[in-house]
Amino acid sequence: MRHFSSIRLSLACAMLLAVPTVAFSQATAPQTRGYISVNGGYQINAAGSVSASATVDENGETRQTNAIYTLKNGFSFDVAGGALVWRQLGVGVGVTRFSQTTSATVNVSSPHPFFFSTPRTASGEVAGLTREELAFHIQVRGVFPVNDRLQVMVFGGPSFFQVKQGAINTVTLGEAYPYDTVSFGSVSQVSATQSKMGFNGGADVAFFFTPNIGVGGSFQFSRATVELPLLGGSTQSVQAGGVQAGGGLRLRF
Image 1 (cartoon, rainbow, N blue to C red):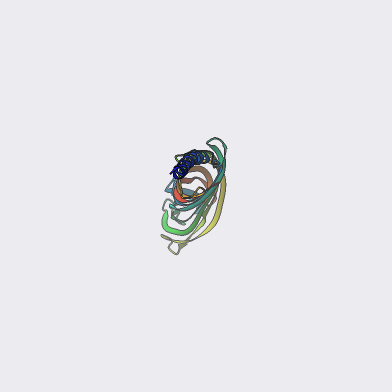
Image 2: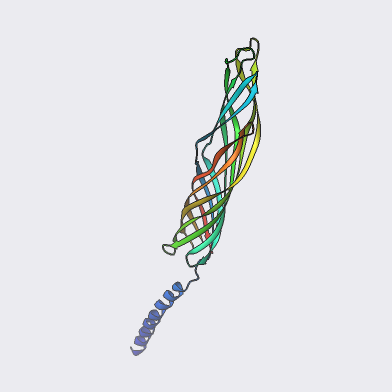
């Protein structure tokens, strides 16, 4: 009996010693210092459309052309990473890419070759105009662990945007005697590219299945204004970026 009592006492002491040992090992686990996120998402453009106009001398009067570009929403992709530098404060970088095929409605008012103040009009649709946005972000991040699996992050900072837009250069009209009407003919296109500084800000929520791997969702707003030659070399202010929402892989180490 004394032998069995000694065994039970030894087991009880071992269990009591094990509890603080486990708690101590969890409390002193190394803190997460770095993070990587990969997202697929959807971008809502800051502006739904943008218009451009151009004029040229024709038949002793002025020919006027107007183009309305439709800026469609679409899928985006982004990658970001960074590290904590002091407590919950971190710095990071990110890249966002957005690509979409847009279209434009073109309206032309052409002076009559024989009669003044008697313009002829024509309209047409131009499809297949590619718009691409590539944004590089520098971000200050606040990382706030809710528990060992759930993490909330807020971020913001400057962004560098590069925008490439398929643009209309010239419009050719069809006409025949007695030249009272014109028809919409063909257009020549150019690729307009411009870069500009802007900003970004947003939030991210991540859930980790293991200490290092998880999934998450993010919400980001970014903005820059670039000047693009959208019609015959005439420049127009165009907003880049917009609201981006997405989700994907989360890594921490």
